[in-house]
Amino acid sequence: MNDRDAMARAITLAHQGWGRVAPNPLVGAVLLRDGAVIGEGYHAEFGGPHAEIHALQSCDDPKGATCVVNLEPCTHMGKTPPCAEALLDAGVARLVYAVLDPDRKAGGGARRLREAGVDVVGGVLAEEATALNAPFFCGHLRPERPFVALKLASSLDGFLADAGGRSQWISGPDARAFVQWLRAGFDAIGVGRRTAEVDDPHLTAREIIPRIPPTRIVFSSSGAVPRSLKLVETANAIPTFVVTSIEGRERARPALSGAGVRFVAASETLEALQGLRAAGIRSLLVEGGGRLAGSLLEAGAVDRVYWIQAPLWLGQGTPAFGERSSSALIEAQRWTVVERRPLGEDTLLVVDRAPCSPES
Ligand SMILES: NC(=O)c1ccc[n+]([C@@H]2O[C@H](COP(=O)([O-])OP(=O)(O)OC[C@H]3O[C@@H](n4cnc5c(N)ncnc54)[C@H](OP(=O)(O)O)[C@@H]3O)[C@@H](O)[C@H]2O)c1
Ligand SMILES: [Zn+2]
Image (cartoon, rainbow, N blue to C red):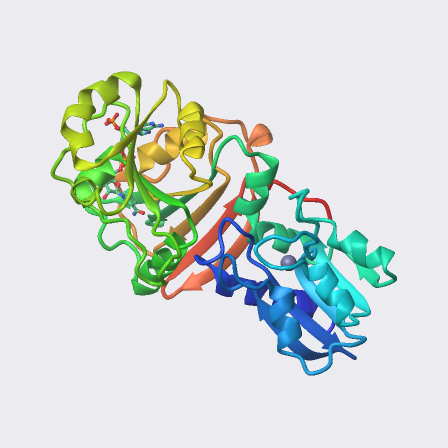
């Protein structure tokens, strides 16, 4: 196995921590000797051992090995001792990492190892490693608002629901299982007020159990959120916010605050997102509908889109991205493709606007 293949394996391993390690990054590590894997591990649980430690523990004799890891090793005594020292104590001879840690307190492991005489190579699969931990990097490099991802399932002609407002089930079972998995990796799941009314969802993660159940958010400038919604009725058990205007909050407060709903009131979208960040939300998955998606895109607030395209035609219905202002082809924003894969009969496309890029 070469360095790139081992890094791809480390990234696959890192995914095993999905939903369990945030606000820490997803990290996987592989130990190689003469191109053969002699140990591997991943960060499995917030507060638990880091990937490098699991990899060292899985290996009989790491002396002289190469450690391949998607984020440089840590140098600080956090909830666990520093990985850089553990790698040095184990006699690792070579370090291959993808990107540096933007957390000044934790980072610096690549330099520490280089200064101690270890052969250090950086930047291997840096783009993939950046996409893997986009919410973590944005959290450090753009801390004022959450990482915002949109998830939408549409027909081939770009509709989220048919002309009667029905959207169950545009996509198939594999896509729905993927969405359940996806939810576990975000601090919060949001929908527009119309989706909250029409679909009356629970917005809980059921595929894997997240360490902290995501907060639910209804976006409603008007504040006209019915008391009878499942999201409202379960607000005392699972944190639920309404993102609204100042007037909307006055309107909604009497009915909803008694139910345990909290409010973020702001006069425009970016300010509302700052309010969510101040309330502790670092990453937000918005699941529609189209009008909310369009308004977030117009505000320049979307960092990533998970677009599930189902092979069916609706002709008319709810447009996936609401009403957008036009842009000439020559000036159009071109986003970066992060992933493309089949989900049963459906197709997943993941695109990023501009990643918060760490150094490598
Ligand atoms: N296939 C899918 O993936 C999918 C996903 C979700 C929904 N759907 C379907 O889509 C349909 C609903 O979509 P839709 O486009 O009509 O409505 P929507 O986006 O769900 O809701 C629109 C409402 O959200 C609020 N809103 C939008 N942007 C906002 C912002 N920036 N700040 C605060 N509030 C904001 C406003 O509420 P107020 O009017 O209260 O101010 C607005 O009227 C339903 O039929 C649903 O089943 C499909
Ligand atoms: Zn560490």
